[in-house]
Length: 312
Image (tube, rainbow, N blue to C red; front, side):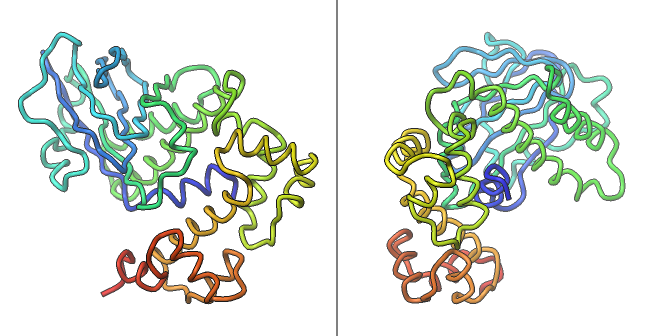
């Protein structure tokens, strides 16, 4: 898998929560901060304004997509001057859909329709790729070069406006595509201006080559020297460049990614510990258990029992 796909597969947990909300007249809704989640807002129809806590309002129009990578609290309203309703909304609550039920029949006559929700992150999902994103990622899906993002937004609108057989399965898949295409659009538009961070790392041929190699073969016995050779640089310049852009030295990132991958396999599968150890580059189950406990402060078996959905 490429780096972006691999990271999203590991850091995302469960199904995204979402609700189609119709707004009419004067309105304003406060959304509470959601730690451990990536919030999203899609303007299906009409216009509105997003007011992040302590930041300038962001005008939004139909087709706009907003990601809140750090779950920042904010207000969505018809105008920055409209005070929010008394009851704040928390997309992490189980009653999120009930507090903002689907109102399909109202779409045609509503002044504004938005899709609001959040992607839950895994306990170990704080990947530096997401950490480096700004508090608010605002994308116009109609902009040049964003055909795929616009297509996903249009498909979401069509499924929500006219639910049919299979809609319950289609919506989560489209929301996953929305996250991927939104992040791709942001990264595609950022490397030229970015001097550090993951946008710059993925835009740097040498560092990107090393990252793709680590993600493609985490079990390979990579060394700083072998990664530097793959990147076409000598060892010391490669290590400095990788560390500056990624935020971790190559060897530390390799170990961190191996443990993150192992945690996902423990959480989502019943693969034997010995097989997981081999999949992330450890020939000894004991050595793997020591490394895993150092990272998560708990043995892999106990971690599996506490997080795996199939465990009793």
